[in-house]
Every structure is written in structure tokens, then in C-alpha cells.
Image 1 (cartoon, rainbow, N blue to C red):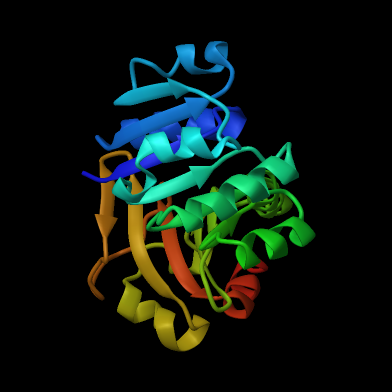
Image 2: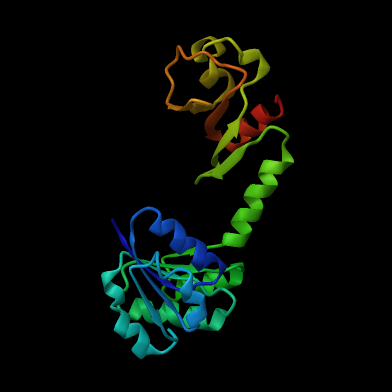
Length: 216
């Protein structure tokens, strides 16, 4: 179990709290709007009404006790920057700030943020990739030019094993898992035989994956 401080319970902060709570984490939520906290009260460990641009409010939270502090107020960059900077001065262990603009990200990183996330941009990119292809069921971009795709097996793979298809040598990818109605089989052996009614989770460099997608 980890502990999180979420400052701002707008769209992103709301969903972040729900997902963290679903993984049995300890969560403190803070917002200056009492109504914004109400729906999350059953999920959060604690809640506080307050304006976190006020240094006294931030000090009262004990920010150094949390594993991660999230600043989820991208709609007001000045406030986001000020809170991020003050969290760093108060000894926050790790600060993640939300933004939607690259120029804002640069200032946040220079003034205390350990990491900056772009929820709207990331979701839009994922949706664009998924719907640009007829057979892409899901997509996750990894670091250094690698990605994971959930796709159906190629027609020429059906009834054959992974080793018979020579997946790694011919396509420069690896099979992470196979998803069927019965569940997910992770890291299938080389003798695993492909079926028409399954989805494959494949990982590899983006250029190799793009070549594979053209064959679907």
C-alpha cells in the first residue's frame, strides 16, 4: 500500500482518486471547492477543503509523508506552478504535475516537478492509434521507441506454433500474452498454437510493429 496526495479533484484528479482507491492505496484529496470532494469522500482516506496556493494550507498537509504528490489543476497554470514549487520546498518525495501544454511542462519541471503528465494528449494519441487500424484492440506506448499492441493473429499464423512461425526472427517482436474467452495466458511457450478467436499482446520496436500491422 502506498500513500498519495491529490491536489485538485477535477476530471483527472477524480478518476485518479477512483483508480488509486481501487488498488487499496491511502489517499488524501484536497480542493478548495467542497462540492468537488463529495463524491470521492467514500474512497479517500482523508479530505481537506483548502486553497493550496496558501503555504499554510500546504504545510498543514504534511506533504513529506506521501509517496507521491499529484498536482491536478492544469486549468490554472499559475496556481499549478506555484503549488508544485512549494511542494518541492516543503520536502515532497515525488511530485507529478498535470498539464496540457509543452511550454507549461518545461516550467513545471524546472520548478519542482519530478514528472509531468498530459492526460488529454495521451488519451487522444491512444485513441487515434487504436482507431487508425481496423484490427487494433489496445495500444500502450513504452519508452525508447517500443510499444505494446493488442491485435488478432495473422491469418498465416493460425494453427501454427510460435516457433513454427519464427515470430521473433521474422517480425522482430515478442508475444507477451494470448487473450481468449477463458482468460489471458502470459508469456506463452514456443509450442503455443495460435487460434482464430484470440487476441495477442505483442511488444517490439515501433517500426517492426508498423510493418506487422500492415499485414493484418
